Image (cartoon, rainbow, N blue to C red; front, side, top):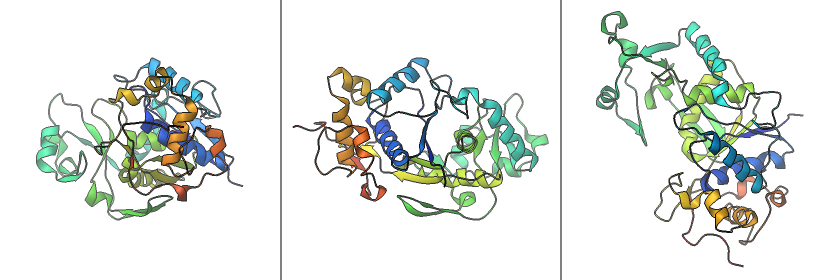
Amino acid sequence: MEVIRGRFAPSPTGEIHLGNVWTALLAWLQVRSAGGNMVLRVEDLDADRSRPAYIAGMMADMKWLGLDWDEGPDVGGHYAPYSQNERREMYQAALEKLTAAGLVYPCYCTRAELAASAPHAGEQERVYAGVCRQRQFAESRPAGRPPALRLAVPAGETSFTDLHAGAICQNISQEVGDFVIRRSDGIHAYQLAVVVDDAAMQITRVLRGHDLLSSTPRQLLLYHLLDWEAPVFTHVPLLVDEAGHRLSKRQQALSIAALRAQGIKAEDIIGYLAWKAGLIDTCQAVKASELIDGFALDKLPSGQVVIESALFCKY
């Protein structure tokens, strides 16, 4: 029988908030309801913004909410280390494998050049026009400017079936273009790092927010090019405020630390999110462990989930 392995992979760039806990809870329930193993991985490649205090606070908040893990930075495991900052050699090895296959090239385009030459592909994203793929580098390489490295995306479509969003198909070369797999500052890009990590840790289930759905075909392409088996993906609706804005770490009033400081109990938070997810019929205090037996993806709403200004249930 397949051993189900899932993960929660937060970035330690601020205190975790309701939106983070929403996906963490659903990912945890997906794994625990299948009798699987849960992995906690810290995505701290952004060294300038990551803070050890945020890592410690995040783990304390998760444990307080009743969301545990079988492997992670604090408990170790067979696939350690569980911090991206300690896994850079693995990303470089994958990059070198792609380079040896003739699939990587340097890109010297500035942000201004990218903005001027590329149409929008979606929110905060532009289609790369392939300028550096076509130019002669020996003649046009800017002096002193380190390049980013891009994947030369082959023509064709990438398709998969998401367990919540359904059938997804994307022509990456036309809708995204050649994408960055190592930034000009030498940091490996998220798209590459997350594939390397999930493959190395033998993750079989990835549940995350709908905002990452459009990046999944790129990751599946990397799995294919690296000859690795991909996990099964589930992209769930996002939590938004009453104005329709996605929850973020800038909304400090919705951080778990702030809610704890107000005297709100863990069972109130879990119960509220479970009610919003359609896992319980009425808004009531409940422990995360009490939701395991009744968890099913088909209970989840199809659209964005609005968080009201008057939070939590009144009993």
